[in-house]
Image 1 (cartoon, protein in one colour):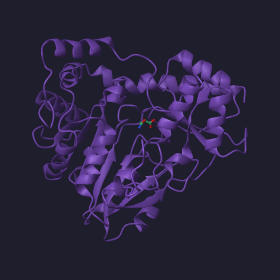
Image 2 (spheres, protein in one colour):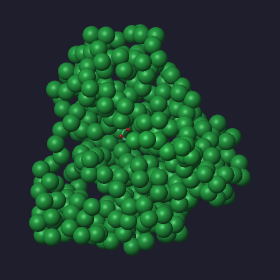
Image 3 (cartoon, helix red, strand yellow):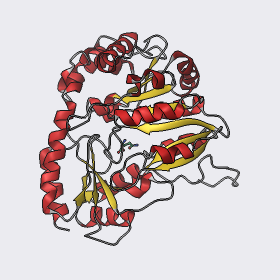
Image 4 (tube, protein in one colour):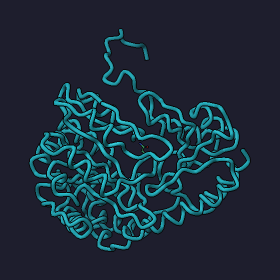
Length: 385
Ligand code: GLN
């Protein structure tokens, strides 16, 4: 196409293509095992597929209500009450949305104004900062230090001032696999008390938690919950990342604003999928057994990787395993991740992509939401390095 004279002023001048797209494309090009982008390589429950199919055949093929199919919202309210003793009103405080990333974006666009400061804790999922910038907000960076990747609440407190409007937390954490404890949550509660700071809590890996840890949803902490927006994802929980369906929980006064924005972004989510999940979610084992299911995979991968020169970092949740490769190479993490995709056929994510300044501690993230045989093949290749 001939190009129009350049009158475009970019909304996201610093953004390139996301690392997930880059690494998945590279994995496809080189027919590499893709432990990069976070998605399972095994099928979801065929029962779930059947339920979507049935919903379509029964004719549930028109728009769902903007905030979501009510019985699904009711089921989520019940699940959240059972797990975290928090009562969200399905009518005014729960909205079904097409995936966690959009829910985060809609929340930030709705609640952040020009010049508002938003604290993010790096390394962090790569959509937070672009969403803040799209809203005219200013990202302010706290850092989890390697190798423990714990939040330093004293450091974070120093970043708070009268312009701070939001703090984004994410546990279990992508990419580090770390989880926030109840003592962390108490520190956060103290820190925001008496301010007008909103907490955006990305809990999409809430059911993927290991070693007896309990997920500390902000909804367990009433003084935090009253100022928090929670994001969760059926894609992560039911092995259906391609269905792009998740939800958002927030007190009614916040949800009113989030819905005002959301309705003009997407309006509503795929109807038959909502009918299917409403049925499927009644089987509590589907999410209550998920931690044990993935813990086995984490352990399997970790034992296999003992014969490699990677040093695995602790992983208490999510389906990501971080590993340091400083005994193998001096290369930067992007170069190293690309080279091993091309040369040995295993794709990963370089952790520098989760820092605004590209901090490179020679750490790669491997997704272990894969069949045993995939993990075995990948570990064998990685052990050849
Ligand atoms: N959340 C997934 C990950 O971290 C992928 C999301 C995406 O591809 N945008 O790998």
